[in-house]
Image (cartoon, rainbow, N blue to C red):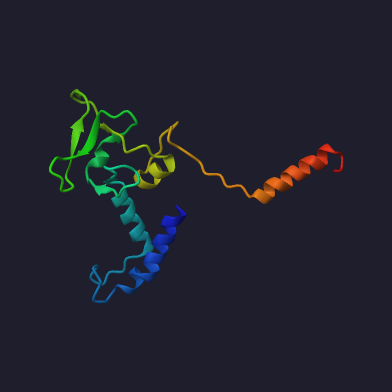
Length: 153
């Protein structure tokens, strides 16, 4: 989250702010601020799909958000034969009329799902939390426990 916010701020102040009226201006003189850029990024990222795994770049698939996410999908997005970057939506099993198409957006944590797609999965098996510990604080804690145990405090 911090990285995205920092990038949005720096891009809007260092690039977008100098565009209006310049020869490089793609917006015809209309000022595009950090808020507009943030909304545009949200609209784009929610329609981007990682067809080749979570560490690879996402592909723009504008209707992909019509299929809901699950870790037990009945359909999948796969590259088409012949390359060129084209993909297709394929059923993994027979799908009955009226049954929703369910895709796996990937083995992604809730922070990733929320930031890119706007939802979280309850009891997500791929969720993780990073904890940072200051070694000095742990040593102080250990020293305090020894002091309490010995009756010095």
